[in-house]
Length: 178
Image (cartoon, rainbow, N blue to C red; front, side, top):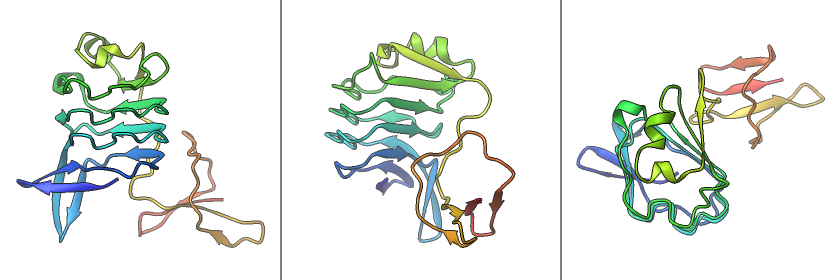
């Protein structure tokens, strides 16, 4: 995910049209300075028809005009914005996203608030996540051992909610799955 920095805050910037998954970070670091990600900019994901899922952190306080316009492949929006911080996205933020088939995942206890809030309430399937959200890949390299007991550092697109005892966490933030 690409970001821009302005006034000590970061925003999601225009993305390449072939992006498939977007896990927006809560903050980014640039030149040893941390900046909170507080917005998804105007047209940030416009025409990203390959985008199937997006995760919005609780730090986001605004979603710009047509931010996810024409994301026709979008099947999942996970919003970690708690009910007490929920805001109304700008009109057209989810323009031409099929809100009948795209599931909106929200924090536990927030479903009623989302269902009553403009723009968010247009999603027909709003699902509360009880407990923790699924594992996020942000900041991690996910790898596994191959048949010869060598580490395979290729990226996997399938992340499981539960990991078995074969997991190892390294000092560099990598997760190794046997």
